[in-house]
Image 1 (tube, rainbow, N blue to C red):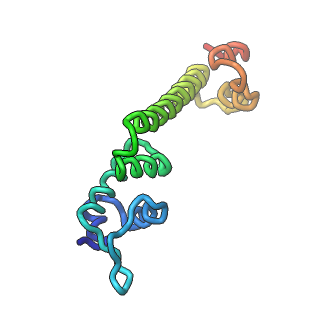
Image 2 (image 1 turned 90 degrees about the vertical axis):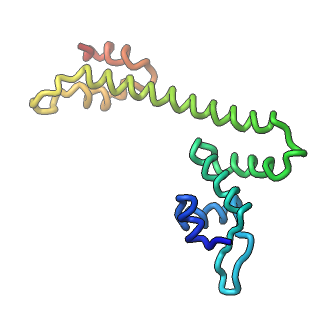
Image 3 (image 1 turned 180 degrees about the vertical axis):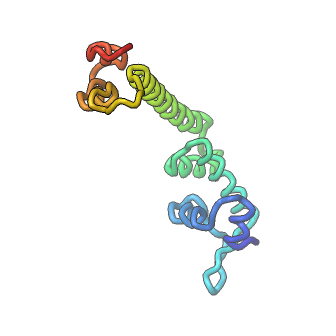
Length: 151
């Protein structure tokens, strides 16, 4: 049996994080002492490691709750349920990647359109593009071309 500080050292998670997971129903101490100390057994440690792994690859607390309920009662659940949770997470990650790539392209276009010199920023193309909100409803390059600022 481990106290929360020992579990923290063993798993690399802070005691605060472990309490947060407990508060959200992801983990639970097997027993508590009369003075309120949490004690964790080997099964609790494996559960904490499961949660840690799932969090590290991006699953939300809600996703992990679903996965834990499947983990506890595998006979009543299917691989299809696990696959659906995982596919939804992958779709979400791919959407974020696309959004980040779009942001990257926009930032690169902004940098490419600016001289970046020591001149005062009175006619800075980056500031003008941001002020005019050129990127709201247009693709990045055509927005800057429309402003006449692409080099």
